[in-house]
Length: 142
Image (cartoon, rainbow, N blue to C red; front, top):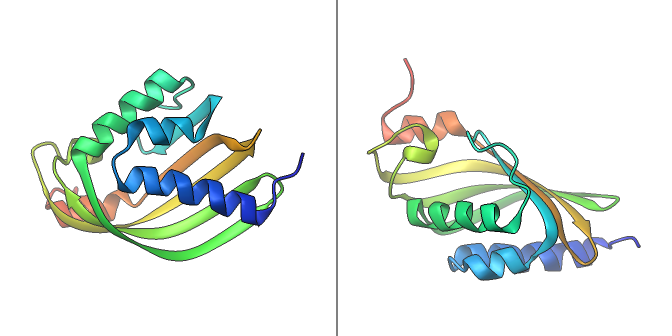
């Protein structure tokens, strides 16, 4: 069964709304039972079960407090969507970005690739601009 761009937009909008409100259960419910999730860069690699995904989001919501997202572009393919945006907010602990003990305001580019199956998100891959984050937190490698 093919997913239309409108259906993909609805699923991603719901997922992003749960993320914006730190609703871990909502985020996990928006994903398929056998969903995969990865953040690049992350030492955890690809997460392949809902319990691991739930734990990752709980930690992420403690470390980041989003305030706004500026959409840049969205591209659609057969069963997938690519979303590019700029995230704005507060980083409470820079540990996920190799800046342990650092905090502050930041804006950085995010690239999401979503794949869909059975009316849910089957895979979410997230790339973030690590260099921009480290520069803003004052811990960029020299």
